[in-house]
Structures are given as structure tokens and as C-alpha cells.
Length: 409
Image 1 (cartoon, rainbow, N blue to C red):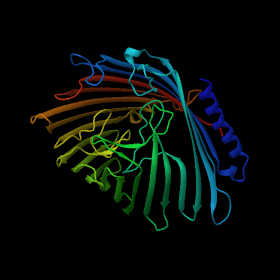
Image 2 (image 1 turned 30 degrees about the horizontal axis):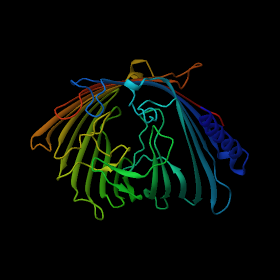
Image 3 (image 1 turned 135 degrees about the vertical axis):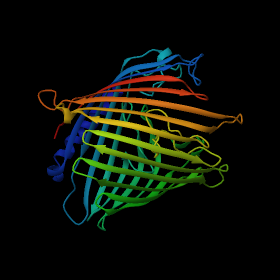
């Protein structure tokens, strides 16, 4: 625990130093406390196909301190962002580890605590920003997962340019990653297709054609493993003051990079959502084509319409459909309360045995955010999932997440 407290204190110290710099007026420091209980019950005989465990169940407490400075004055403004994180084990045992909440030792047991510290130097000219250091992403090419105790981080550099109205350009080079349940930097690898690369680079742009319509085109490459071209379009049409229809289209073409084994995947995904008052109804369709599954950087979330709580439905030749329902209880007099339920069914999966497989997943997500009083901004969320597969794990999963974030500065 001493190491964790040292890292966490270092983050606080950097935040304090930033607060006394010239750019304090635009600085922001927040602290988030996240308590997470995770339970995954493997239903098939023999337990998990990977470990043989019948259950993975752990409970932990995480803290995330973010200190983002403003920029110094001048043609080129400089700043510093800091993120310090610490995770503590509250309950676990060797026969229930493997939830990806904590690092595990050589004996398979989860460690009692771990920590992360990330520093990011930034510079800004006009409406263009350069960041170098620790980075978190939520874009078409890299999506840092945040469904465990602490988020995943990357090390590298990124530039964002917004000099032309309605056009946003991005480019990045990533050299290492720190997984959600780790406190150490590691090399980048390919998920589903294997392979290890020295770096991952991506660039592209998004253009807002109309106020509620945008298109994007992006390219990414895990050096020596795979390269990927991604096109996307989204549009929101207001049908009446209370009714709207939103479409989300995603296309991707993936192939090998360098001397890596032959790789071929094309994915198509479409999601349509009709919103009427407090109700939303969604329908999604996704199709994999080619001789390989959809590749992406290991540990990240794939940019797919049918990637949900556990499954990505991105196996070889797989086609899948999704139905989703959302309810906002604010219209019923309970602001802060929400419900989401969805079901995804996948079929025609090409298996190594030569046969075909099927799978399905059902999710329920209920959350409440306190709106006033001493508990204001405290959120409580219950996530439930059921997965059944003819070729993978059958499992039932529950996550209970309690979060509270407040501003320090």
C-alpha cells in the first residue's frame, strides 16, 4: 500500500503545483470515488473455458484524481494535465479472481492494491492542441474502456486541429498501454488476431455537414499487425418537439500490415433509434465479412454498434441484430432515474471445426443520480448481463457501481 499512497500523493502534489501556476484561473481539479462489485457466474459444466473457475467475484474501491490546467498566455499556450489513480481490494479469493478489477500475482491471486500516475504536457495554438504523455481516448480508432475500477491509459502523442469551421482533424502515435487492472506500461497487441506492434498510429477527421449530421473518415495501423479504414455517419432528425430519429452507420475495412499473416475483415453496422418523449426504441444490424474477425487494439473497446457489456459479435462471418429500449423517468417525476434494456443475437459464426455457431446477450442497466441534498451527484448503477453461446462461455454477470465525483478546484 505504501507504493500506492506515494503515487497518489505525487498526483496531489502536481495538482497543487499546477494550482499556483499562472494558468490557475482555467485549472480544474476533480476527485472521483468509485466502488465496484463484480460477479460473473460461469454456467456451463466445467466452469470458465479459460480458467475452469465456476465464478469470478471481487469487490474494490477506486479513486481517480484529475488535475487539468489552463494554458499560459501568448501565441503558444502551455499546460499540464495530471491523472492519479489508486485501486484497493475489498474482497476476493484465489478461486474467485480474474474479474480484471485488480492485477494478479504469479499464484493467480489478486493484489491488495495498485496505482497509476499519468502526466500530459499540452500546447495550444489558435484552435489546435498538441498533447504528449499519458492519454485517454474515446474516438473511432481507440476507445479507452472504463467499465472496471480504473480506466485504461495510453502513452504517446496526439494533435487535434479545429481551424476550419465544422471540421475536426486528429492524429496520434501510441507506443504503450496500461490496462485497466494494471499499474505498468506494456506493449501494444492485437485483440482477436494476435500480434505485437511497436506503435499504433491513427489519423482522420469528422465533418459536421449539418447541425445534427456528421460524417467521419479515419485510418489506424498497429505496426506490423493490422491496418484499418473506418467510415462513419450519424444524423438526428427532429420529427416533432418530442419525437426524433437518429441513425448511426459504421463501416470498416481491415487487413494485414507488413509481414503479419494474411488478414481480411469488412464490417458493416447500422443503428437506428426512435425517441418519443421519455421512451427510446433502437434497432441495430451488424455483419462481419471476410476470413478473420474484427481486429482492434487489445484491451480497448471496438467501434461497433453491437459491442455491448460483454460481447462484441465480431467473429468470423457473424451477423447480429440488436433491439434496445431506454426509459427516462424524469418525465414520470423522478429525475435522475434511468433504465436501459437490450438484446443482441448473433448467428452464422464460422468456427475452426467447420461448423457454425450462435450466441446471444441480454443487458439490463438501471441507474440513479441524486439530484440534491448532501448526496447530490452520487450515482448508483446496477448492470446485469446474460450470455449464452454455442462456442464460448455461458455466463451471468452483475456489476454494482457507486460513484461520487466532486470538484476540488
